[in-house]
Amino acid sequence: MSAGIPDATIARLPVYLRVLTALAESGVATVSSGALAKAAGVNSAQLRKDLSYLGSYGTRGVGYDVDYLRIQIGREVGSAHEWPVLIVGIGNLGTALANYSGFYSRGFRVVGLVDPSPQLIGREIHGLAISDLADLEQVVRGTGAVIAVIATPAEAAQEIADRLVAAGVTSILNFAATVLAVPEGVTVRKVDLGQELHILAYHEQRKAELAGKGEP
Image 1 (cartoon, helix red, strand yellow):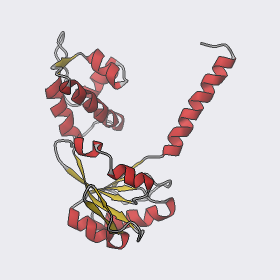
Image 2 (image 1 turned 90 degrees about the vertical axis):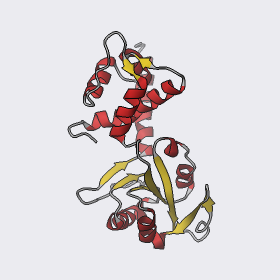
Image 3 (image 1 turned 180 degrees about the vertical axis):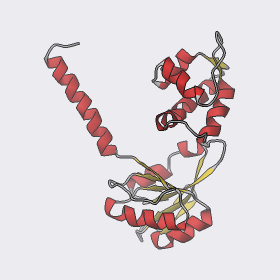
């Protein structure tokens, strides 16, 4: 990842990459900043600013070369590599994540599934057997995973995070309903589905209030 790119821009790069991939699959060779921005849900000025961090400014009157920009962004977000991912917690959410085909198309390969349940240990998802949580460290080292997804109950997440970090994991995607404490050098991204739903509920309430006042 290039130094100096703001976190907000980094968060938008995968969105641009997804749109560009769809354009390429449709046979589109070039795209204007306006069309790309609209498809990504941002304004043109924001798009141009984001892409300027990559040194990509497009061609006036022509736009952006779709394949070239895909390569640029893919290099920045690591999709040019195949990243080994470990999923801890194979309940409903963990199972859904293990079955998510989008990992593979974006440069991520699920290499390990871990759960403490005797009913799940040994079962396979896409040919990958679920390992015992007791063997977590061995699974991390055996697969070389540096990215882990925690999809466990909140009360178990911190201990699992500690064990993952001690075993060599340096990036964690946390679905557990708790804030994880990790040492410097370890990156954590939290996915809080409840929080996102509350944000949507807030906007729905605002719409209802404005409609009640007769505002457009």
